[in-house]
Each structure stands twice: as C-alpha cells, then as structure tokens.
Image (cartoon, rainbow, N blue to C red; front, side):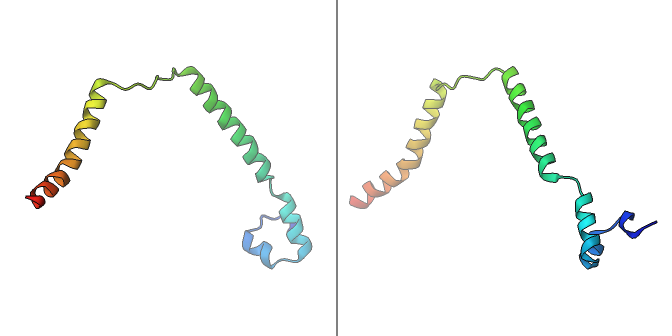
Length: 88
C-alpha cells in the first residue's frame, strides 16, 4: 500500500514531504462549501417553522402598566424620602 493512500493524522501531514502533504490536503472535503449548504438548509428550515407558527401581537396590558408604575415609585420613593428628611 503506498504511503499517500494511508490514513494520515494532522501531525504526520505537518512533518511529511510537501508533495504528500498537498495530496492529503486535496483529499480533504470542501468544508466551506458544506458549511454554506448547511447554513442555507438551516435558514430554510427555520423560515418554514417560523411561517407555520402564528406571531403574537405585542400589546400593553393594564397589569403591565401598573407593575411598571409601581416599580418606578418604589425605586424612587426612598430617594425622595431621604431628600425630604434631610431638608427638615
């Protein structure tokens, strides 16, 4: 069995003659092309899945507004009370 047809580890390619290293690199699959195809497939699958699912409409409920106001008041109230008591 010729050396070029043997399975080579990356470490052996680094220390092998340039011709043999070139043959080993040529035997590798085109990972960039495979990655591009995979990205296209994943994006198409995601778009198809998103199209099936109904998108909820954003809205503000009275409870959300009340919670936001209460959180703001409880955040600012200690500072306001501190300033008022400092002035008295």
